[in-house]
Length: 479
Image (tube, rainbow, N blue to C red):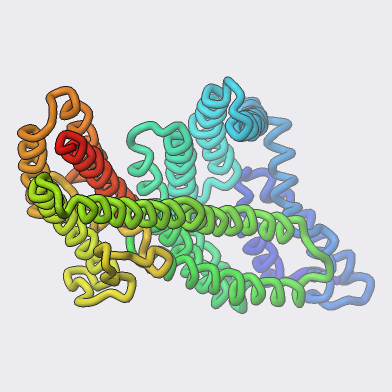
């Protein structure tokens, strides 16, 4: 009967040890069992390599770890309880999150409570118990950092998502920390663990491409949520590396090595789709929200502005021979001064967005001058989510904001001398810049370029509406 050499036994022992069999007695039993199976196949005329390959194929991938899990489940009460807790909390948290999403979409009561409870189950019960189970099954100190980084990234992501949906403070901070944990710790640790696998040297370029692609994709999502520049660039490069290089290469290499499609591969593809597709949908949704809302709304505001401007001019011209013409012309000139200030702010904001950081564009194709004043082609703006212009030109303390406030106060003071106190109470609400720009702060501004321009357009139309009312009042008293 053929017997295994010490070198062959050592190879089998190393291979089984790589399966992270932490239960010492079980490790020895499995080595002995595999050695006996290999010797049996060798007795039937095969050499060691053929026999060992047949035994591994017969066991299937991951079978040794399954045996350890079944053994631990039978003999270790703590492990059994923790394993059950992982299953129960994972299923319960996922179900509650799913129903909460449905309730949220349908605007039914109880959505917030279910989502909060589901997040607490997943973040503070499922993830810690899963971390404990993984450590119990492996006792691999080299992978401990991977487990811990995955735990913190997952917990921060779940809580950040909950806070974002519920509109609670610190949502952006939690999501940023989750993304940074994934980019700086979890994804590199996962890639290094795969690169250290001596049996899959052919897949190392795939792991490198996948790691870089995942880092760029997560960074792109973070930049998109936070309205930072380069978000689209990171997303496109990340998706290209993952979808067109890493995944096809991994599929090809796996197909060559395995005669059947393993469940692990199927779940990997599904998991990849569950991450990439929602991320792409989020990006498209955020962009579409501007195309479907801000862009048409701003165009409508500009159309209203043109109508009010031409209407007020026409009214003034019709009273050119009236004794009140001089007063009407004076009011119109003061209104034009405020409009010029707002138009100048809009122009600077577009130039700041279309240029490079610290180097505004000297001229922007999105801006044009017409007989009614500044016109902006909103559909041609390349960075509608850019928060820098609003922060630079609309935040309290900025020179442009101070100039606008001062000019508006002077305009209100002038109107107070030519209109009744009752009318001025109404006009003051429309001319109050602080009411329109309360969300813009100098330290933590998230107001995008399009939102800032939309606010300024509304202010301009409010100004022309007040001018129209006062012009009619002057004309009426003149008659």
